Image (cartoon, rainbow, N blue to C red):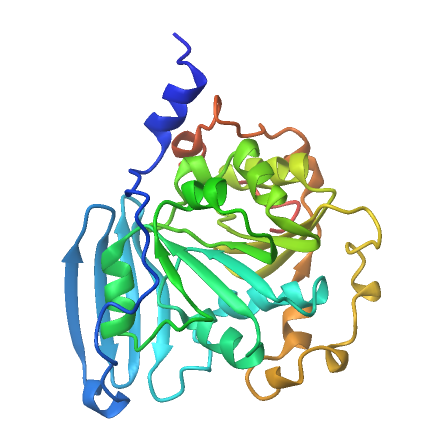
Length: 319
């Protein structure tokens, strides 16, 4: 029996937090890196995650467990927090090729806030609004990984889709990185949700999504993004991660790397911390053959769990 759209959406959605939101830091300033030196492992069970914080000297890693194993969510070197430890977080900055001067950015998913620190240093006048579902992630991000939100890097505790529905602001970048131990909640992967995100983008804004290319879900992810956005570009930073960049406009063309701006013309504050030429080399073509036959995910049809267990056959086209 087919469930009504609203009921089906609620059943597949992650539990929603109350609309009450907070942007204030939750704890005192994090201790200096030297105070956290040494090796240790701590685990935490929350309503949404099983989290592990591992310390190796000044390197702190945040991991989450799911049925598919334990996944690295984020890593920060407390002695050098602007040095991005996780490859895909560097790739997220490829958004600068398509919108080089973001004034407002929305990030769905906090993780360990590795991306946030380099963004704040590189775009000191911009606002990076983050939305996080799990209060424990926010707490650990501050107490263990040394992140302290400011007026320009506020964090709101609420379901990402609820925030997008209610927030009237528009953004130059919207980044979807709401992984929960290897998967993204189904209600954040549908055509309807992507249309809600598109409505919150400025005319020249870019939508960014972190995808897992190791199952059949990947092809549906790409096709669903294509159903909403006029142009889609893919980057392949490492096994298990493909970063999709999508825009609403048809011109200028962004799918030809030869037409992208030169790295030297982009943010000079990246120097020494981010090699965009290395990121450019991660560009890969859309796997058109597989995407063409994939299902578009909607609120009425979002078989994320099913597709997520079917191994992808990427032998002919990578990723």
